[in-house]
Length: 178
Image (cartoon, rainbow, N blue to C red):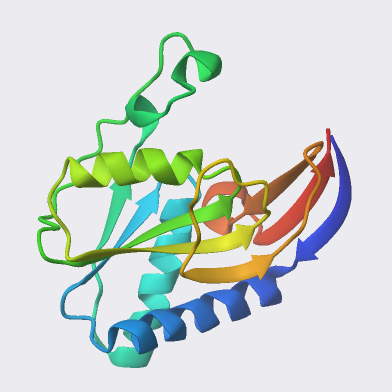
């Protein structure tokens, strides 16, 4: 794959995280009933960074949980005939909580739909909001993010790669050609 463009460097990623953190606080007015749920894999470090920033701003910790949506995907057979499901536990009662679902890229909406199914199996939250670092368009389902780091129009033959130090050794967003 050839890198076509660097859409966000480390500073831009950090600014987006700060802005999204402030927007979450403004929209919800309190962190008392708030929980961040990162969609595995890159939604997890993104959620943790938002939680860290909220703690800096509010001086209160916001819980972060990891959501593995592998078995909820409608394209499971296309990905792997024998999926590996994480044994990490989602051990938090989300009933009557404000859940901010966090992922790196919003594309067709199918990942978010699977995540919503997985969340509802874990309890009945008061509200679910969606925080995304990159919205690249091409929706197949009527899903829209509440908090967006950056809108990046792409073609279907491009791949948006979000990198975080925690998973990739660098923090940046790239557009690659297939």
